[in-house]
Length: 343
Image (cartoon, rainbow, N blue to C red):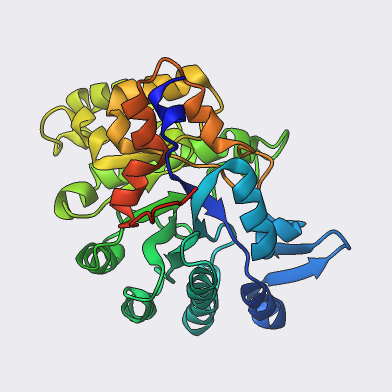
């Protein structure tokens, strides 16, 4: 038996989604005024905001007792809870702040209820600078808040838009990492509308587009202390980095770039959700085991039921690499002190 199995690693799942009832209640009560309606077809809440859709939401998304039971079955010690679509960018400033606050307060409550098992990635209305900065200041030191969650695009605004720079600066000053997630993906209403392609292809493409804006738009250079986590194994970015490098060396649109852009790969962190041992192995070889963290996409059907086994069964990895990916990297990035006896 290898070292990982002789000495269990406290597993930290960095990609786990949560829809607290209070967020759903606020959205259901006032959301239709800005096109965000909640309905229930008997299987669970369904949220529709234009092309964005979530649900029916199973009770596992909402009920913390069910979540903890699932974590125990998975051997996951800690989940970092995050919202996913529709997030809050569709809403006007005051309502976007209200939705963000409702979600963030429930993150704190979840952590206080299960302090050794649940932490949170805060939602900010980043399309409204003043509201976003105020909410960040309110929650940056709140119990269990360990990062900030953002879409790969903010409405139609790319992540290198200068209106976001004061928010990046404040997040970096707070010492919080930014976790990205696809939201309004390219092509979701036309060429990717069939066959679930908006998720199967749109999500990984959109992650690569977001990363390219952060690189080419100078965000990663301007904010050297800003840590950014890319979901779904970095999406298409790791596999297209050669093409991006070639373009940066040839195209006049990228004449402002200096040096080999592949160096930016190690400015990002990545989760393990690749659905391919060979793809995950390639990612680790490309960026290093110290930049990869466990993720499940809990509890969507596009995620992993047993996220720890995805890594522990990768026998080509060393025990040290497995330890780092399963828990040590996330513990360091999220500043989580694992207690003795943790799963």
